[in-house]
Length: 241
Image 1 (tube, one colour):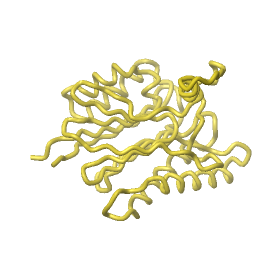
Image 2 (cartoon, one colour):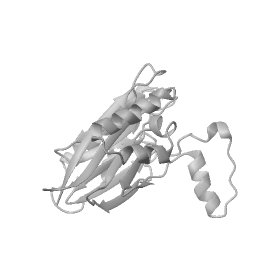
Image 3 (cartoon, rainbow, N blue to C red):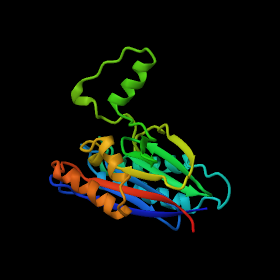
């Protein structure tokens, strides 16, 4: 048997005038994650908020037993954000990342679109469970298959998938059995663009409580300039007494 300790923290940073990150930390539903409004488009806050609202509503409506199917929930969130974008910004639309997990029956079910991330720490090892859906990341995957791909460095962080796009996005899905001692970190790119994975692993693996760990992560991002909103959600998986 396991029990969870969770925490969430979001910070506006030093340069932005609005926090366009939103998070889910719902222990009753077992849903945790982050949505980060797409920069450069209007309505980032609204897109991220609507995405987390739609996911929370969808999870509430899932059957209580059996393996949950998160794909329809993500596609519904995409449709809702796209429709809002047509009203708010007909020429450009609005968008958000969405990376979340649903904990049920000793497993975590992950769904991911965009460049927010989910990591797992266990016994000193720190591993990314998601891949960024960006120009640079997609090019790396295609090159590994032998394709010749070029892109401009100024465009390397541009998203290739997001919630709010006009066509149904491909959703990355993953299910893992939870193991006592594991720690899961969901975070926005305001964290990952400033803090190396090796540093994140050391912080997440420390002896501090979840909220203290997140405070250290956010403070470090801000110490390094805080150019973006930074948000983290932590799940500590403990052995039940």
